[in-house]
Length: 76
Image 1 (tube, rainbow, N blue to C red):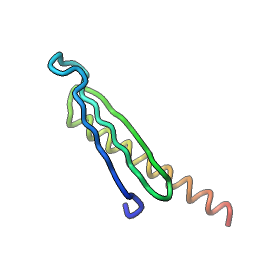
Image 2: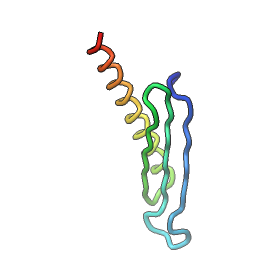
Image 3: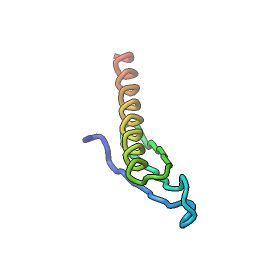
Image 4: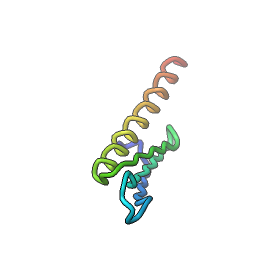
């Protein structure tokens, strides 16, 4: 968590009053070490869409940090 510099979240109702699978959440995580990771999730329930996007952003950032550590250890 100390590696994360900024997290931005965008919420959108794509179809407006038409209904359907129209809620979208985009999360952008910025870090000096691993750069930027952007994930997006969409569905009918805003709560589950936000939860899914947050989980995916966390996993993507964690994988990037793990790859960076692996390269650093291989170089040592």
